[in-house]
Length: 351
Image 1 (cartoon, rainbow, N blue to C red):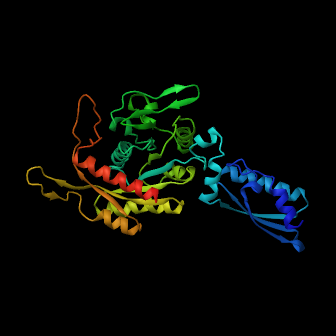
Image 2: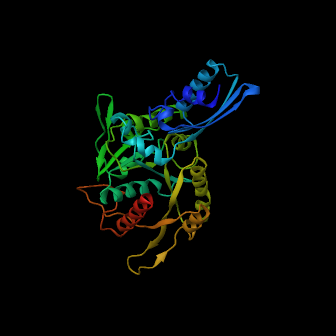
Image 3: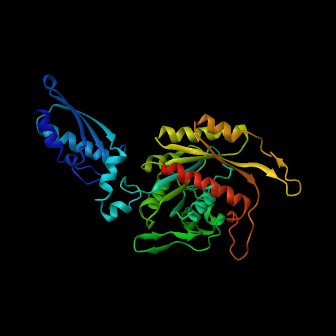
């Protein structure tokens, strides 16, 4: 076969995500033919790599070329550029555009990670989501910490999601659409499932929840770099990550692993938030560095990213009528810090 014949043959195959032929997407980026060895190597660009769909396409390519008499086949994959993907968003069907895991969906994923538990990662997730919603953004929040779910309680959510047919309708609170394992567990029972079962739950959170149109979907990740966190990193097409740490040098050292995991899975680190940065007394306004000093800036420097903000230790103002024990009001001093962080996040993503 010559190069033109190879391109005509493979050009009929479809990109598994765009449902357009490789001819239409210009997805055949190179063809190399070694006649003496009856070997053909091709390089293909598709919407999303390292997926089961890629493996299925790979088998179709091999079958097509071997069916045409080729002895051996070599295939390499790369991802189509964001500019090319943008061209096809306008032609996507409604179901394709609404599929959160489809490269055609315009939602921005923001993962909130930490190296260890107890640093206030869920508190940051909740308040950043609320702050983004207050700035007029359409926001969803997945409590992906399956074993240590806490988001519904933190946000004072009393009701459960509704089920309409095969779709789950998320609960909305403070302008944020929320889904959590906590909604599906009776009486705060412990979750004793193993990894594969948890992966199915997360898949449902992405595919079976009626999210509607979103600007941002925040994921409150489990602490550390275990199986569930890795599954999420591999599941979502692309994610920006915010790493939460306390000022303590050891916490920052451990948090660096979470940032490194994001980079290894091709997810960009958006910045670092230092939580529990200090305690400020009401009487003297002096700052007491209860958990040490310097961890946040050190971690940001190590991950070559920005320190998005430092959150002091202070309780929200509780309101019995609208009780949400971990949500800071818009006028609270810490609520204002979250508003500043949310503005920084929006500006960084717009760039």
